[in-house]
Image (cartoon, rainbow over all chains, first blue to last red):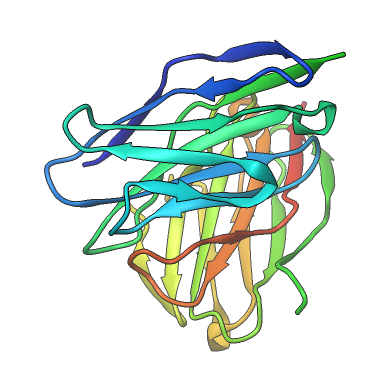
Length: 113
Length: 114
């Protein structure tokens, strides 16, 4: 079955600095990849997704991610973060023949003034 | 468009008691999911419905957990009897289809078992 590893449990960063949240996946078949954000006491909200095509995917709130098949990675980036980006970020993977979505353990992004 | 609705938002029970959670998915979404999110972890799929049929319940602890989706719309998840390790947020999600579709999440129900 597919799986996801988020390499950093916590990422502190100063406001207006760039940030990268790392995600690696494992699967023996083609994958679909997702990044979700979770604000305190809320459900998950989709930031962006990769299904096929261009490996650079742009999402909401200025985030983007790049699918790298050779490195089995799907890292999330933002060139300049805001205080409001403070949240938990989850990388997820599903495979083409079902929607069994597997989530990583999450990365807590803390943006400091 | 209304989002995924869940109730209650919070529940505190003692171990060995029973509890039920309710979910109303986005209108027209055929697929419904229940996830368990333990503090500090990512969501773990418990059960997936396609209309009113079960697609995947391989990770559902069937000795104590049950779920149903009558009429292919809203769904209930029940725990009986609850254990301390069931303390978690229970998330409901829905999607228009299966493979490759975004899942839309409700706000979750935070369960505390004492």
